[in-house]
Image (tube, rainbow, N blue to C red; front, side, top):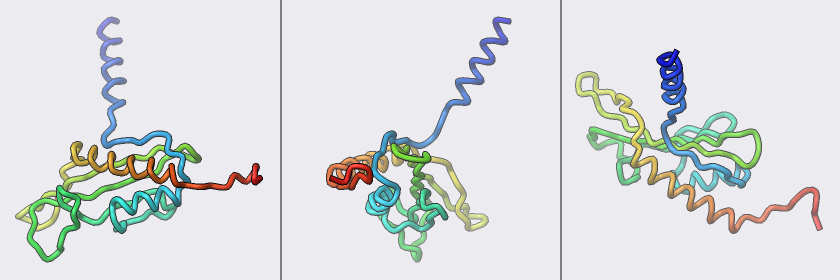
Length: 144
């Protein structure tokens, strides 16, 4: 019984691991959040139908856009997802690394780069906080 409970606890704890970085309690509306994120990651390469998932164009480790004509061995992209049905939203940020496979000449996903994810998340969090300070919303219930 002792081993069974230890095993179940181990499964529970290993199942709770998440990758990427989360910004909690973002009080900006979704359109404003999208504007702030686009200002940081650049013009999104992919936007979901509901506008809550934004994927950046390919960039290098310094977050500079890659020139498609150059031969590169590794590339990165940033994916930002706005989670939650209403405010405050939670924002998920992931920077994924892809490496060129020389045999097939295609890029292969190598997983999430935690250090770059943290850097990008800090930039987005600062921009969201700065935008929240300047955001002026009219409350529909208390107009005056």
